[in-house]
Image: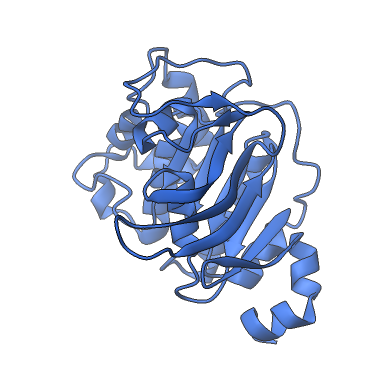
Length: 272
């Protein structure tokens, strides 16, 4: 895997939105309000859970800046994916707030957050298996009214195997190739932030390294990348920022290097 991941924030905006870009708004199920300052995306002291169930998150804070890779790690059942879903509006945030690019979006639906520029790749059921690779990418651009061909070309440059298999049903691809389709589909929206839930789940170590290299390339364009990852050590190696969650709360926060060097984190979460 590439170790040259520093100095990401260059001027190549490729598959990302320009800061002032606008998209055709969809129906608003809530209202976004100005909240200037702070990180580009932040879930600030989030408390909440699913429906009328108990709280799973407890004053949990997750944030990512432009050009950063931020990683959420922790033991099974720690609330990692729940925190990601809270940021994307898939559960009730009963305390705290979610802010994107200076706006409070806590009350917006997931669909409206996509319109605001959030690209989310869930862990499972993240492609249309009966559709071709190219049709999957076209579906990712459903909210756009402009010419999508340049973005599709950029996705093919990022994931060359997808160009070769563009007319093949996505369901026939390997696990790693499916994940590339899922990430590519999210990039077709030209998002302001990319959110990945367990992007390397079920793939081989070699494929994991390749996916991480591509994630580094995406972050180098200036696009913030936030991901939940089960391969904690490898993820922290490429992370600008890491969050260790335990029982839905922040246990440790720091740069990837700081967390890898922390004796308590190493002993409790990285196998010593």
